[in-house]
Amino acid sequence: MMGMGGPGGGQQPGVFVLNKNTKREQGRKAQLTNIQAGKTVASIVRTTLGPRAMLKMLLDPMGGIVMTNDGNAILREVDVTHPAAKNMIELSRAQDEEVGDGTTSVIILAGEMLGVAEPLLEKKLHPTLIVSGYMQAMDDALAIMKEIATPIDTNNPEAVREIVRGCIDTKFVSRWGTMISDLAIKATKTVCIEKPDGRKEIDIKRYAKVEKISGGELSECVVLDGVMFNKDITHPRMRRIIKNPRVVLLDCPLEYKKGESQTNVEITKEADWEKLLQQEEDEMKKVCDDIIKVKPDLVITEKGVSDLAQHFLLKANISVIRRIRKTDNNRIARCTGAMICNRTEELTESMVGNKCGLFQIKKIGEEYFTFMTQCEDPKACSVLLRGASRDVLNEMERNLQDAFCVARNIILEPRMLPGGGATEMELAARMKEKAKAIAGTRQYAYRAVADALEVIPRSLAHNCGADVVRVMTDLRARHAAAGGVNWGIDGNKGTVADVKTMGIMDTFAVKQQTLRTSIEAAAMLLRIDDIISGISKKKRGDGPSQPAHETDETFGDARDG
Image (cartoon, rainbow, N blue to C red; front, side, top):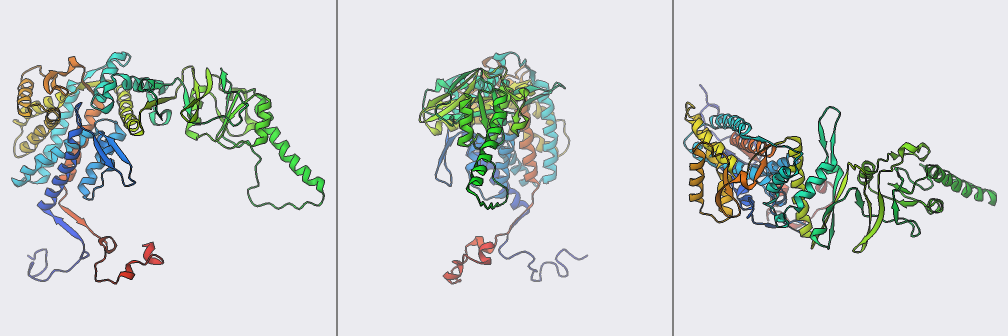
């Protein structure tokens, strides 16, 4: 039988199928480099887990700085070249989009899942076997999680606050106590809409806008019962404070429309020119009359407003705000009950919003901000953040986004699990017991997952300077005994504690997603046995053999690639 290399096996000179510059890693070497890459990415964020977490300071390519301990924010800024590392960074982004929290945990777990596979590969276990063991372990772990999860009453604000605190306490804003978690819960409940079929829809991205204004006290952070935006009225004589305003929202310009294509008009008599101008004016007056007919106090448009329209509206005592963003306009519509109108002729009484209690314009710092507050039952809101500097505000916003997501997860999936590494230890203890009943070499992979889960409590203990070995042994012993589900690590003191009584809880959705993502990602990376990276000539930086002027060519085809 002939081998793969054709007659004579591998003696003949090989045919070059791939480009000479292509790097190729095969078999065991590819798996080990993938594992190494995964572990390296995990080591970047390992110290940012838990309440005693360290911050990372990153310089982005533009020269700006980012200070954060949010796993996703760190990895987003890190520039990596290894394909496996890119895959790992993608995990934290997916986690952030899906559930919003646990971005650090998912990377640490995935890195550890890869790490524990290394000795198994060295024992000549086939990757497919390891992967099937991993998958079985994942199914069992998810089943155990469902078993130990406790339901929660979302109408009890204390219980919800505890869970959001559990997420926020590991972040930079934890020193301001419950402030951020209260902001998050209030904002989430504001934008929560119950559909007719009983489903809840929470669109935080679109309807809960975070407005950051440097300066001021941190205690001035607030969730408005309405919206605010950075705009001022168009004419200084318009009213700046209106109680219970009637609001009209427009999506059309209040200025004379120019022709779509270029228009030339030849005028023979001077009077015709006057008529032309008069026509424009009449057109504008008609538009303004349509608006004035519904007796609004406030007109907000996404487009421009001409001086003439301003004049007519000012005479009718109407305040005007122009060139507002579409997203802001949507939020105002949800707060005031107004409908956005595309043509002024179509304006009717039903399109006027009258749910807003107070319209006022305040000057904060150097800029004017419009506040529309005291709305009855608003379904959109603005969260106003004040802080010392821009970096502090950016970090607060990132933390607030995590808190939003946790609050959303609780309302959508009201179940929770013990935090502080307790869930992971319980899973590890139960799975080690189960592993004994599994036949064959798959047992090794199954046990490896159980060992890998311990990385979360271990990192927590390590980050607050505890005696890691002693704490872990103590935890293992307590989870091996019956009824030890809630024993975890107090991340501030580094001691073993009952996390339920301390109120350290995590949402079921986050834990489930973290576990599933990390095991599936590790399984996928382990099944890779060949990495081919073709480096094109251009990227390699042409060697010195080429004349200098040839590389300087910047026009023609060379530039277009």
